[in-house]
Amino acid sequence: MMNIFESLREDHDRQRQLMEQLVATEGASEDRGTLFSNLTQALADHAAAEEKHFYSKLMQHDITLEMARHSVAEHKELDDRVEELEAMDHSNPQWLIRCKELRDRVLHHLEEEEREVFQLAGKALSENQKSQLASSYRAEMAQS
Ligand SMILES: [Fe+2]
Ligand SMILES: [Fe+2]
Image (cartoon, rainbow, N blue to C red; front, side):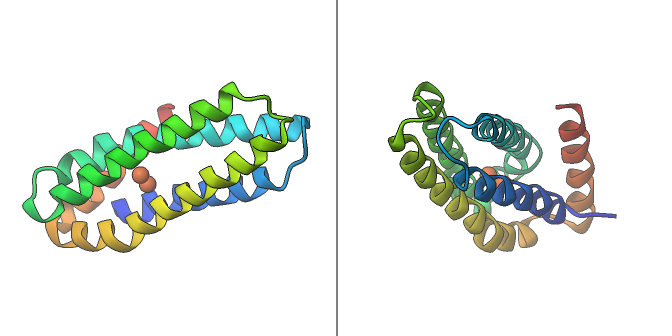
């Protein structure tokens, strides 16, 4: 049975893959539109389920409270960047520049979660919670 860290990491890897594919696309291609909408959906679904089934628990522990708040603030920042890109013409050369900035910010966020948040959360959560949260997270992601 998977724990919450493995479940989140699996979706992080999917995001990494989509972002690399997206920044390799050109101009107003159909691929760019499809990959961008797949990526933004993946980011939004993941952030919502992660906040509900992971960060809400971490907010209840002193050692993880600050990191949890920081991560949720980053979700908001990423969301703002996505909205900005949605509003821009995808064939505008500026679009790819801003998209690469989004990729860098997402990569930073994922790495910080995997290195720092998971480390502290490993101490705050019980083994039982780690597998229960994985189940509830997966169930929510399956519905989205
Ligand atoms: Fe996150
Ligand atoms: Fe995450």
